[in-house]
Length: 353
Image 1 (cartoon, helix red, strand yellow):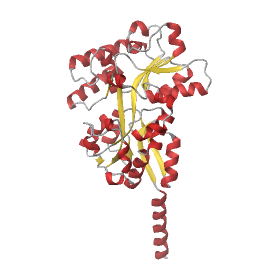
Image 2: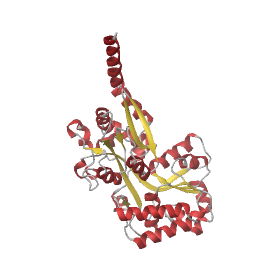
Image 3: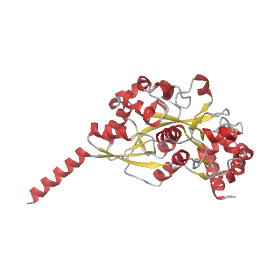
Image 4: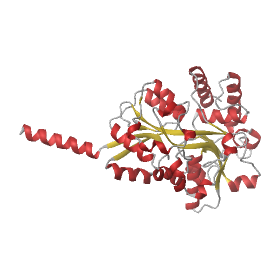
């Protein structure tokens, strides 16, 4: 009887391993459900997705000891803190032949030299999405960050503007609006950016990273500081819903943030085998192209370009030209002192008057 029970337990264990579940901790709307389903069919496993709304939220959860994740999809500026915390395992590149498909411009960056831990899979631009019909009727120009930060303009669209609930992105945009680097570590520049945000805040409807796609699509808000892939989705949803207005998104003349996201493997991944398989799958040209075609994100995979919809390649936020790239600034890892200053500033912004 004991031998029978042992055999049954072993068989159950093998079956569970064969089926398997890979746990993915990532941004919402980063990988399409169609792509996930194709991977599940290939690996004969299930993918369990858990989402976060900002890199700061993800780092806080992982620092606090959140476990059970196999693959994490951080913004690249989140990689150095994860490495310092000892939460990542180096990539076994012998098992990732599709790494060769990466555009060299996105490989071997200072945030992860030689891609020891990470494989880039997309990039997004932080910009302004807007109700084109409403802004046109009001004569408001969305190609400047003034549409988010200038009280004189905001007074005309009060309660119709949202910004991300993300300190790096919102403070970075305010810094750019004031002519500073988004990665500024100067206290006086941070102070001016915070003052800009506080002056604009009374006119905003909300800090919203979770439902602004829907709110913009429904017409409840007219301006959103958001991510290019989310705003692509909002535009698509408005078309499908046959809204009487058009959703659009555009770069700002003061410059925009461009954040590359990568896949990394948690040091204590329960299924590192599935994690490696997933990353190599996502580095395949056709699979990588799905991130752009289905989600609207920019693509760091050179092998993906032939499979990307040509109409999307004409969108500056998805496929910026050489001059536009010069206007895009990647967020970098801040010093501990600056990070604390930004966190204090964000708390003051959120809870202050």
